[in-house]
Amino acid sequence: MSYIFYNPTPEQTYFAKPIDYKNLNPNKPWGTHTYNLFVLKHIEKTTPDVQEKIQASKEIVVCQKKIVWWERHPSFNEKRALEERKLNFGF
Image 1 (cartoon, rainbow, N blue to C red):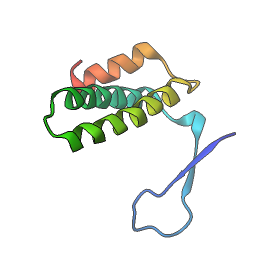
Image 2 (cartoon, one colour):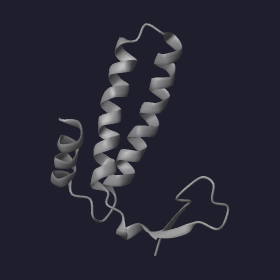
Image 3 (cartoon, rainbow, N blue to C red):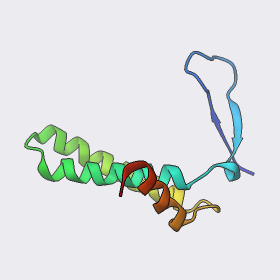
């Protein structure tokens, strides 16, 4: 069994509450990351600022890894994930 630990608020200093990996909904974050990937690719192609272009290309790599990670989740459903993305981001 896998757990993810997090603090609900940054002010809390006690041990984080464990969350069972299997109970996570992978479809919503997948939609968010695919939207972010779309935006980052747009920034990378259109910005005249070299530093911003470099930063966007670094973030694209991270974003792609997150998308793949969510796709490996046992509850991932591409159809539902696309519906979530359309609901939240309009595409």
